[in-house]
Length: 232
Image 1 (tube, rainbow, N blue to C red):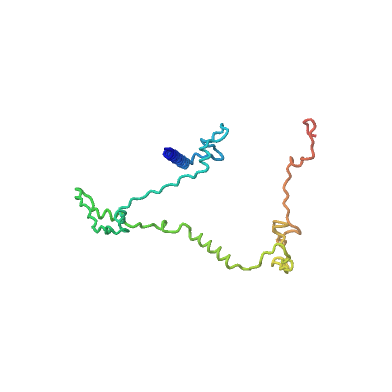
Image 2: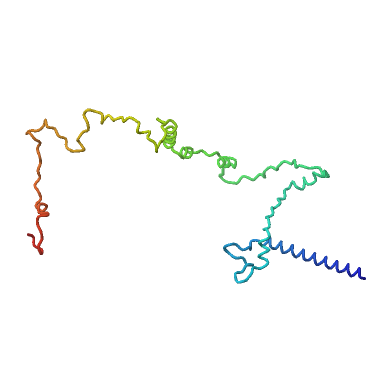
């Protein structure tokens, strides 16, 4: 009798342990299934209310668990049933060799309609592109400019390195321009005067000067003062 009682207690403990393990697995599955309800740094979850002193045990379980992985749908292929018996070789593979059926002939509609083959030929004819569509988006002028830039960059005139912090340019001899090295010097026209002077055409010893009559109002500027509204 004692042995039977001990066996019954042991069996009861096993059942309880099994039920506890089953409940734990269900809780873990629910936690993985509802992993999207986990709290974040910005928003608290439904199991982590800010009005409670400590978070719900479900919140702690959500933190420990991992989310469920997405199941891939198995596409039922028509060949799976035929190829299922290949490893066991219980059934020989069969392939359908039947030819597709010809299209059902339709009666020609009554009326002045064109032939169906002609309509389909016109509908599916190849595209005849225009000159604007067939041409490139970039114009030939832009392509020529790009090619000129690449050619200029590739065939440079000089390859002197850029030396910003050296006295390389100080030892170079100054080469004056043709305008500076000539014996005639710089012309005064456009710098000192803007009227061409031709002494050979003068009638007198000096050039004729045009003097315009002065404006009376401008001549009084700075010379007259107002005293209580009266001009002195």
